[in-house]
Length: 81
Image 1 (spheres, rainbow, N blue to C red):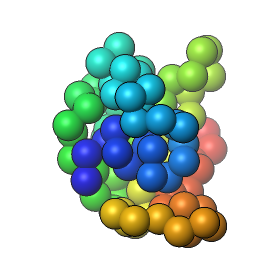
Image 2: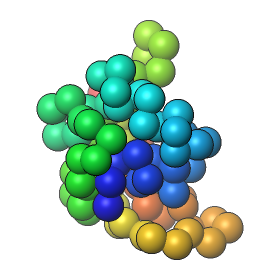
Image 3: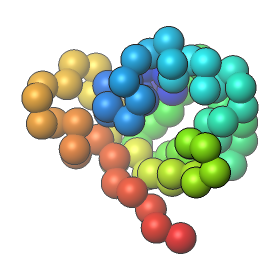
Image 4: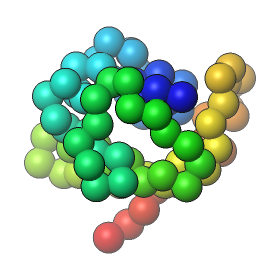
């Protein structure tokens, strides 16, 4: 699944267009590499998103095309440094 769509489906970023802009600005890394909006993600990948001055690191647990109300909580886990 594309990173911009994953961030929207996992409810990390509210809108796909905002996720796309974050990728284009170089604020999203997948496995340590700068991600483009079309970068594919799979279970086991690590994503780092830079919101302001504090980065958020998550691990992709599963990729779901259609997400029901509370299923997004199972899509990722937060990694603490």
